[in-house]
Structure formats: structure tokens, C-alpha cells
View 1 (cartoon, rainbow, N blue to C red):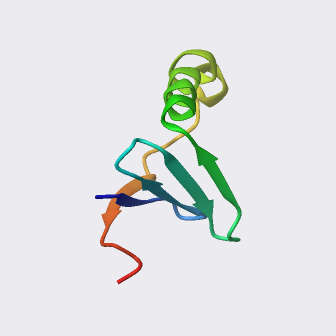
View 2 (view 1 turned 30 degrees about the vertical axis):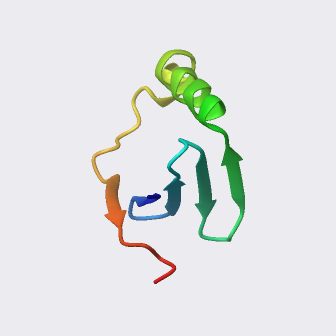
Length: 74
């Protein structure tokens, strides 16, 4: 069963769908989508955790929230 999330702060929101196979779809408020296979999502997490971390130093993320949503298709 796929899981749906909303990641947002006071300015912007992203909608994330994770399917049973581990693939990820990220959609912004304008409707643009990025499709990641399970392997690509794993690489992206590695990249953010290890390589891109320095880009986010000093960025205040206290107002970022993650909510699990019900199936938006219902």
C-alpha cells in the first residue's frame, strides 16, 4: 500500500508518494513531478546525508513539518 506525505514549511509544500516497491514520486505545488526508483531514492538520501549536508548548515528547519496523508485518490 502506497504512503502519502506532505512536507511543508510556512512558504512551500511538497507532496511525496512512496509506493510498495520503494519508488518515490515528489510533486510540488505547481504540479511538477520527479520520479525516483527505489535505487535512485536510496542514492538521493545518501547524497543529502553525506554530500549536500554542508549546503544546509545554518538553515533553520524548525518550521518544517511532515504529515502522513490519507490516500488522496479517495
